[in-house]
Every structure is written in C-alpha cells, then in structure tokens.
Image 1 (cartoon, rainbow, N blue to C red):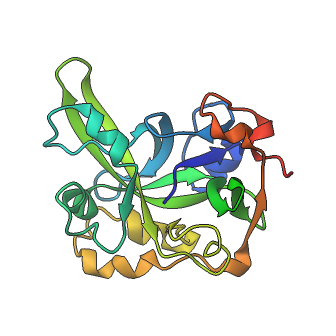
Image 2: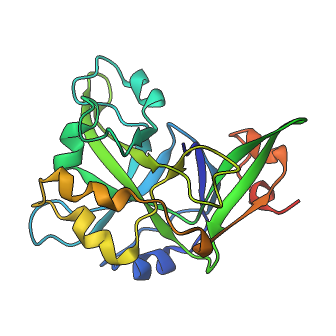
Image 3: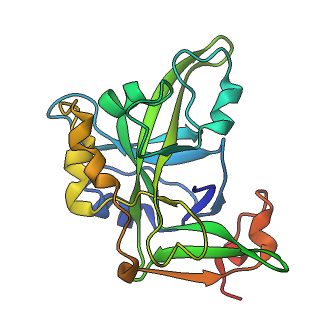
Length: 222
C-alpha cells in the first residue's frame, strides 16, 4: 500500500516536469497523510491542457452516503480497480497523476516497525497512477477526492512491504490521462512495478509516525 508520501520539490520544477501551463505556489510537504489535500495533474476534456488541482486523499465514491468512507479508500489495487464498484467508473473516466517525490513504508522487524523512505535515485518529482471522483456533500458542496493505485512490489520493496504504489513512466502520462481512452484493459499493463534499479530506500526515524510532524526530520536518513 501507500499510506504516506512527500512532495518537497519546488513548484517551478513540478510545472516543468509535468508540462503544466501554470503551477500554483504551495509549501513543501514531508509527511502527507490520508484525508489531507494532495496535488494531482489531470486533463478534463479532449484537447485540454494538463492542470494541477488539489484533491482530498481518500476517494469518496459518487454513491457514498457520507465522506468517511474516503479514509478507507486511499489505495486501489491495480488488479481489481476496473471491477470494484468504488473505482470502476473512475478507471474509465477520471484518471489522474498524483504528484510526489518520495513515499514511506514500514518494514516489520523483530523489535517493531522501521519506517523506510523510498524515492527515485535521480531525485525529483514523479507520479503515482491515481483515480479521482467528485462527491456532492450536503454541507460542503462538491468534494473532489483521489486514490493511489498499487501493485506487486519490485525487488527493492519486496523485503519492506507486499505492495507498492504504481509509479508511471513519464512517457506514459499522456496515455494514462487521455480522457478518450475508455478501454481499461489497455491501461492495466501500466500497473507493472517500477524498476528497482531506478529507486532507493533507506531507514528514517519514527518522527514520521505522527502525521502532525511535517518537517525535514521525517525523511532524514538514520
């Protein structure tokens, strides 16, 4: 799964990497947690430009009775996302890139769980494959929310966790975002795990365990 991630890259770098016409300013985040607001890139409508928006992390299906279900929908398994009632409509119509530059997993050890930070060796931003929905809240109006698609782990992640987020290659962004692509069977091959040789992982302190801690100490090596 993917339960915490980071985005500390500068907005200008993100805008250039994702070919965005404009990028809003936002503060660096060292410990993004479920139900918080996260940056996503999407395309709405044919021939539209990519845009960066901010959605709640934890997908709220359009048919949900209340927003609390979103806390249990932070991840969608790639193997079943096209079939599950909560995700199948979004798989056809509402796909996005969830912007990150690293993520955390907790490795089980005899003495307890060791938080690990995983990122690309080259550094910089990348994108999780994401799905999004728009839910009509009776109190807040429309709420836009998202989920991260997960897959089997690569060789780097396997000793740490039995799942990992789908990290899409940059050259496949257009395919994933294409609003005219409705054949989900053509998209599921994108859910292969990212190559381990392109990634690195190292232990960090338990400072990251508390979601309210959002500073550079979260992803410092120990």
